[in-house]
Amino acid sequence: MNNMKLKHYTLAFSLLLIGCESDFGDMNVDPNNPSDALPDLLLTSALKDVSTVAGAVTGALYVQYFAETQYTEDSRYGTDQYDFTGWYSSPLNDLQAIINSATATNNYKGAARIAKAYFLHNLTDRWGMLPYSQALLGADNFQPAYDTQEAIYKGLITDLTEAVTVFDANSALNGDILFGGDVARWAQWGNTIRMVMALRLSDIDPSYAQTEYTAAISAGVIDADVMYAHLAEDANASPWYSRFITRTDYAISNTMDDAMTAKSDLRLLKYADPAPDAEGAGATGLDLIVGMTYGISNGEAGDIPNQAVSFPGMAIRSQNSALPVYTVAQVHLCKAEASVLGWGGDAATEYNSGVTASFTQWGVDGSSDYIAANPYVDISSIAYEKWVAAFPSGYEAWAEWRRLDSPALTPAIDAQNTSGEIPVRHAYPQTESELNATNYNAAVALQGADILDTKLWWDAN
Image (cartoon, rainbow, N blue to C red; front, side):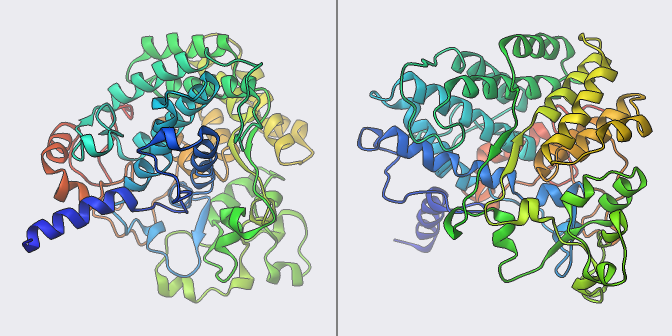
């Protein structure tokens, strides 16, 4: 075998095995033979990566929830290419195996289709065009074509619309670590994802967006927070706990600290822990929180001692901290935005309900005083509260920030990317240009340059 063939087969094999940010499940499960694997095991394996999305760092750095305390390249946009292959080879492959199974019941297939839409929605909002209609075919197609983001969005919305109708409350759904087998909550979650996706298309395809949004609301969205529950054990701990076992790389950013302190927002006391130096100096209340300067060089960051800044709060950093996936606060704020668009409801009422729900979610009193001091004014009020309420779900916040262009965020002081602006997408992994060149090149020709600054299809304004 010559070197070129060896390289090709080695890289092709890596497409099946490479991981993203976590362990992608049980290596004893063969997703290419779903008849040999129990759907409950596949479902559990796939759902573990909901935590990977909810606890991801990169999006949270882009929207300046956090700043890096030592190695600041990611918050200065020093990484262009991000790998998506592990998502296809692990959680998505597990879910597709359930969908393709001849023995899995409708409950498993409905849950698998909803979870698949959740993951693919996250992925397309990061990269844009992706393999979709030709993806997850295993050995039948190692070089899938890329679908447009419009095709992906509308395909996923169709999947969600169909998936929520198949559940049977009298049939089991074992292995469900997200909702404990409660199929009614699965249907609500599917409708909520559909609602969020529809609203995201409000600038690029407003008529379709309104139709799908209205249908999702009518079908019934979540009325309780969707939280990913972690356990007090290393194998199933919060990713934020795992990041702080031996390192202290992240602190609350000065952007987040300054914005919330200016509004006397007591949620900040849950988002961040007191800075030891501030505590020692006798500071109280919000003065205990000290943000790390965002986007500075490694050398400048290294000159700031850890005790001078506030680390992420124990509400997310404890071993068994639950992380939000979608929340009631986000639903109300989406309804507030829809009202501004003329899709029904009252913006101020939904804004108030969203803020109140966010305070309740974090166990913080004082929402009435906060609303009185920071009432609804216009869409910028909603955009700001979406940014605060999504914490620490950086990818969701990043998508909303790109679409709404609010709140105003200043790019990193020492940005490393060419434009010096906050990224609006990820670049594709190098393996795609090497192993799937024809389809990669077609996607780039249609979507635009494969760089951090190329806007996604729905990012029309």
